Structures are given as C-alpha cells and as structure tokens.
Amino acid sequence: MSVKMKTAIHAGKHTVGMFLSEIAHPNLIRLMQAAGAEFVVVDCEHGYFDYSQVAAIAAVASGIDFPMIVRMPGLSRECVQKYLDAGVDGVWVPMLETAEQARELVRLGKYAPLGQRGISTMRPHSNYAPGKLTEYTKKANDRTMLFAQIETRKGAENAEEIAAVKGLDGIFIGPNDLACDLGCTGDFNTPVMEETIAHILSAAKAHGMPCGIVASNPEFLKKWAARGMTMFSCDSELGLLKKGIQSMLSCVGLT
Image (tube, rainbow, N blue to C red; front, side, top):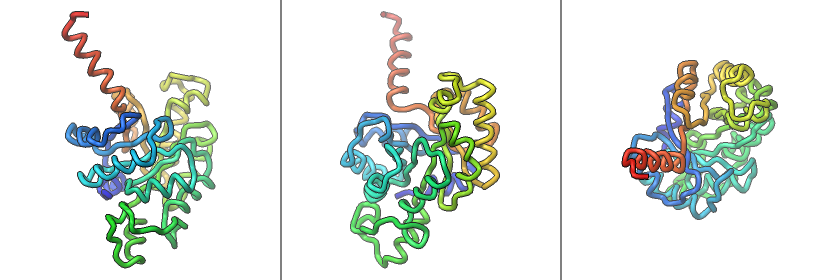
C-alpha cells in the first residue's frame, strides 16, 4: 500500500489521477503511472470488475507504489472488507448523502478503536507480514483512505455534516449525477450547479477536508482548481483511448 497520495491530499497539494472503467489488465496502471498520473480509481460502481481482477490490479499497484482507490458499488461491509484486504489504498462510496453513512464508512474501514473493521491480517494488505497486531492496525488506519462521493441535492445539503466526520479523508463531487438531480442534466455550468459545487467545496474547506471532482474536461477541472479544489480524476482509459484513436484517424485523414 502507498501513503504518498494520503500525504499529498492532506498537505493540500494538487493530485491528478484517472479512472479505470472496464479494462481489467493490471499493466494499464503501469502505463498510467509512466504517463504521469498520480492515482487510479478502479470503478466497481459502473464497471464489471470482479474481486479477483481488483486483487490482481492491486498487486501491481502495490508493487510499483501507485495509489489505487476503488469506487465501490455501494456502502457495504463485504465490499469494504474485501477491497481493503486485497491491498487497495482506499475506497470511496458513490451517492453518499448523510453524515450517518459517512460514519458507517469509517466504522467499516477502520480498525478499533476508530472503527470495527474485521481483522484478517495474513492478506495482501499487510504484505503477509503484519507483525504485532496493535502496531499493524494503527499503521493500517493511518494509511487507509476513505472517500465520500457527493452527487445528489441531498448530499450537497448535508455537505457540512459529512465533511465534519472524523476518519473521512476527502470528498469527491460527481457532476454528472449531481447535474441530473438538480435538473440540468449534462450541463455543469448552470448557476445552480456552480452554487451547489461551491457550497460543497466551502463545507469541505471549513473542516479541513480535501475536496475534488471527477470530469473529463480539463478546463472545467482547472476552474475548480483555481477555486481551491485539490483532487482531480480526469477521464478514463476508455475516454482517452477513444480520443487517441480519433486523433490518429483525423491526422491521417484517410477516412
């Protein structure tokens, strides 16, 4: 497991990564790292990765010290337990709307006394060598990352309470679903979107909580970086592959 992303985001540094949406080849994350990405989010909400595929990708990520987050299908003990035990650096919950849900994420994702994560240490997350249990569980709590994704009106309304939850490491905004819930599907630049995103960011800042956003438009990301966001997930392997193919065909000009 890597600690460099957690160190960076809590120091307020800009951190830029991308999604792995559905291609389950572990060496793709080596390519991402070589190209300059600083973390990867494996999308198990919309993507169809199984646990063994996530574990294989996590093994490579750990070997090259590349931070790997899993966006879970939802908030459940099974998902939190299996992904963290496989050695991923963190998990994030989509459609998180309340402080109660955020506290439940912390309960499931942190060992006692911070939470109630189940203990099974002869696993990849400890590199099969945990050592003294009390020392290992503290170290694991210190390095594991837990993220909330706010992408509904209700989540935005509760942003202050969510950002105040101890043990949470950051808030990501999901603009696609947020725009849909606000009645402006596909348009991230409406006044209501601007106001809602700004409110979430302000709530995060008030509690010293790192805040970021998921988008494929670099100018949109730059705008929110200028306003104080520090975590950015820009596009995916699918989006970038398609754009690269289209760019190549356009340059060749034979179609």
